[in-house]
Image (cartoon, rainbow, N blue to C red):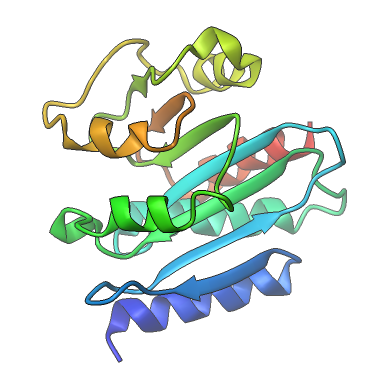
Length: 184
């Protein structure tokens, strides 16, 4: 078993210990991915998050999520997530995971942790999702900026909602951001 697959199992288990419904999944020839959901209150926002557990920045974001889930109050927003273990090789199977898991990953807005441009990518109409505007303001993302490599934009369009890429940050910053996002 590859190290990235072992990481996926460890992360899945840590999320499960904090009440997330998490599972490892694998497409043929792909590294294991982690998918799941943290339930918020009925009628609350539904936010998606993409991590890359093969990168230190992605692991910092996952650690921040674990810390946010350790808060005593239950989350108000529902978070669906996918962690890809192939960012270092260009995430060749990400589109396949997004297509295969589309029903599980439906959300109002998606956050990409440590995206290639660390900028906001408007997919669809960002004005249609108020939570997207709040996230963009909180993270001071750059509206309308696109990565130099357009491939991620094409893949993200599969999500069918606004996508906000956030810059690499440390675990504490992610814990504050995700804690505020899930619990406010």
